[in-house]
Image 1: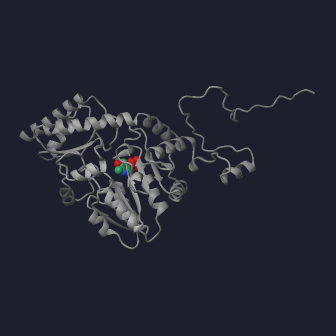
Image 2: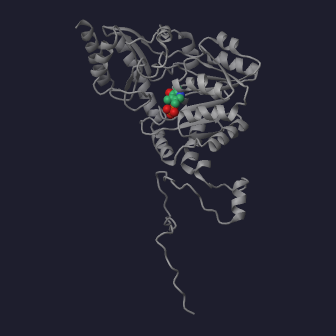
Image 3: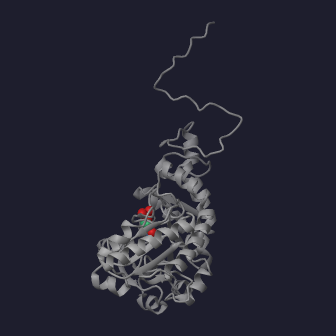
Length: 399
Ligand SMILES: *Cc1c(COP(=O)(O)O)cnc(C)c1O
């Protein structure tokens, strides 16, 4: 008998070549679909008897790997990657609320979170109340019988106010409310919400965790397995899944996260001290400093892990602000935070442009108010650049 050679087709995929050695770097699994052997195997996968991926919106190796690592960092049993930080915020609302529920949230949350709370949730039948989370009394007073959730950020942007997390966790615990913490600013190295009574932790992985401004991704994890499942279902059903490529980049960024974070925090404290000595600087805000408005809370909540964000205010208006930004050397004026390189933000024209002038003044956000997201550069370079920038602003004020 002669073997008829099997036809080959350029259309058909070939199996990945075998190798007794394995790649050191995680491969990028760009496949949207996974091939199962037969109907029994497909059944086993969907019924959870066999582990296996089927369709990448429902999960893929790059997301599973990063989610597992972030869950470990946050002390959570299980977490899920999302397409952005806002997708994580959305997953929390979509997965854990029912129509008619009321949400109490910080009034200085990330701008888009505030917009969801102010505009989108009410449109969908949820009520919301925004309060100053550094004031536990205000949080307690906002709770109603139908309140289901408290959403807080530990350190606010850009005024770097610190939420009274112990008191908020106590309120949530006593009233049986879900406490959700957006831990983007603090990171698991600064604060681990689930260790302190929170039920859910979320992140914009885009910021410090990814760390290189080249990936948009988010993460959500819960202490309770039912909540974790609800979050994952929300991500899969509403299509909030992170792409393999973004997860691959997030994983790469995470490898250096500890090193970057420690260096950036050290730089931030040094720049806080440096800025205080510069003529024309009216005030500097950094958690952990004796003149911080929540100094006692900083110590209790952050325990000396004060982060990489420093805000400061200079004398003058728009002309001085422009002069500072134009003369900041390699420090990019960009609306983000957590990049490996230092960035400057001007809240009046970016994060707080939708906020009324009166509300901004109440927060102390003037034309001369800036927020630094401190990176890992040589701190002497950063000091030089900030000295020149502030001197240029002072000069513009004299002209
Ligand atoms: C940036 C940010 C978000 C949104 O994250 P994206 O990845 O941009 O969607 C949410 N919360 C906080 C605190 C943030 O800084």
